[in-house]
Amino acid sequence: QVQLVESGGGSVQAGGSLRLSCAASGYTINHECMAWFRQGRGKEREGVAAIAGIGVTLEADSVKGRFTISKDVAKNTLYLQMNSLKPEDTAMYYCAGVYCSSMRGRDVPQEADVYRWGQGTQVTVSS
Image 1 (tube, rainbow, N blue to C red):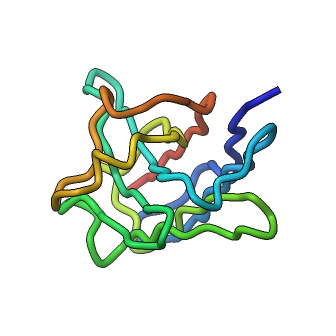
Image 2 (image 1 turned 135 degrees about the vertical axis):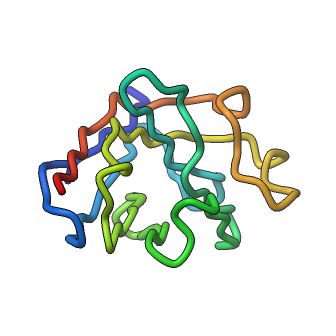
């Protein structure tokens, strides 16, 4: 069964850190383009960061310098290291497989670029 399973969400105070994981099964992410999205309450889902098969990364302006996307090919797992968290980072975070054509520019992928979603993991940042 092909699926993406996120973990690592939780509650943290502002300024703290969390690392999200996304374990892929049923296929390998080595040459795939992958991304993290988030959706806050009452907000649209937005791209946060993406990584191409060759390792090139893109980050949304709102998280640049604070969030880092990476992958461990041996573990077939995608990560999102989140530092200096802010209350506005509170959201459900989703791992996704995206079409690599969406990473040819400087902007992170959009929802329409996603071909596979994980179920999400909640991140709550308190002030």
